[in-house]
Image 1 (cartoon, protein in one colour):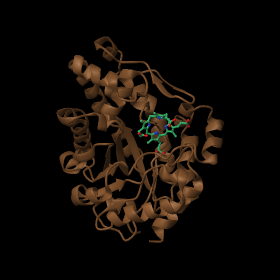
Image 2 (cartoon, helix red, strand yellow):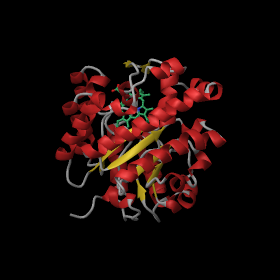
Image 3 (cartoon, rainbow, N blue to C red):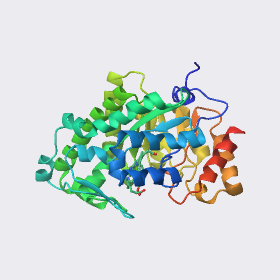
Image 4 (cartoon, rainbow, N blue to C red):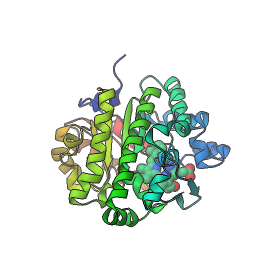
Length: 343
Ligand code: CP3
């Protein structure tokens, strides 16, 4: 069997048609997802139900034939496995118990103890390994330490990550201990995902863009570099995708500095610039604005062509610059794929 297209792109091959998958491809824009989620009850029950989580992971593969499936789970399951309380408020988003001082840190479990809570996630991967078409790559993931820490410190999503910035500035010892625990926990979690069948892993640093200068190196780049290094010590061939969202000029050199096989580009980055400054170091992924999945039409078609064209001279995985939104039209996803595959 020819090697899977996503793995070929991640290994640095330039393919005539880039392989494609989509961030949040299993989600509320799909009626079949909404039906399965209703069956599970709430979002966390769905994440921890291996049969149903595997089912929603497979739904976009059946409907669209994406080249990769991403494990259905959430970046906030790791803090929960470390001992934080986690719940989701409908229409608002996640809520967690907060970590703001040494006392809070002391309530967290050691990294080696995350597996008891997370074992259903590994079961989901085992089911998927047996259920996916042979050409489809299975991607595991975790949040990057900085982004996960922003939720753990604030107890919720924040527009400017203010509480995490405040803690890192006012009590760096506590904040560094939290980042350290998350680095170790993430290495544990992703290693177990690989053992359960993930062929690629991705780290989501959705809030990397709020870190400036030396802080970017210390809290975004360095934790991700350490995770990549630790995983490669165990799995030398493991492809790793890193997503330092809104890193802007810091995308340049990021793959070399961290050891990433691929960097995921958000949609604020200019594709031509990224082709000459980021793709020179290896595979890139992403860049299409998720809004086109809502609006569709000629603009979607021309944007797919523009982005595929800009990255056509090097390894590229087609994807959005961030997750697809619940108001997206499933027909526009089909149009994106059709356009790409007919180029
Ligand atoms: O991409 C995929 O299809 C895989 C599954 C996945 C989910 N979340 C499912 C999900 C992945 C990779 C994530 C990552 C994630 N989760 C991130 C990083 C990526 C990004 O979007 O920036 C973050 C910051 C989270 C935390 C999180 N989870 C938030 C803030 C929310 C609420 C916001 C929202 O969209 O409702 C979630 C919930 C969530 N995670 C949903 C899904 C499908 C919606 C839950 C539902 O069914 O109601």
